[in-house]
Length: 236
Image: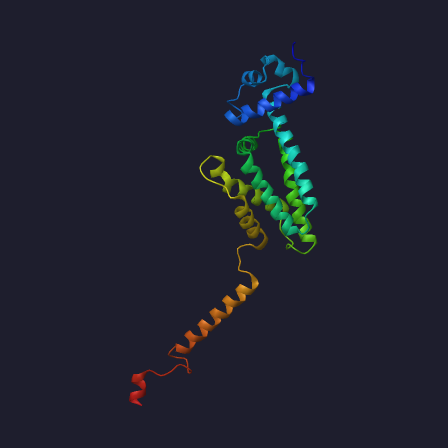
């Protein structure tokens, strides 16, 4: 008995799954529509009945991936209060995405870099929506007095995501490991507190330096409080 033919949505889903596998395995440029069709068990022309082009396929693969993350992020943030905690969560989730789907992240990063003109307008739109979670947390932190005012949200956004991509590139190219818990803690701490010493540690360091300066001044020859040398005391 012959198997029932899949309906249109099932076929579309199968093509997208196959395209995702092919793009992740070979990259966008090297992936062939004929291979995608073969993975599904259809002829190449069938793929074009569902998608206008290979680029259309890529955009839909990335769009589906983004849509899943949008829902996951919104659900995770709903149960977390405090801008700093929410910032750390977003950083951790971004690192987790890179850790769990390095091939797809590498594909997305390269496509974003190669974006020219209107070809990837939809990708830019999705990326702005994705990074908007972070911008909202920054603005929320400023409004609640947790973060200082005057930080440009777009600059902060680019530093966070650009820094994470640079930090993770060795992992993305198969040259290192990625401890997402440790990285999330360190990255969020840097962005929340900067590289300055905490207030109490800074006070201790200031006191230590003041005491050292006082001791040095006490030893200067022209300091009336400085002790006289042994030779000078003998000649008096």
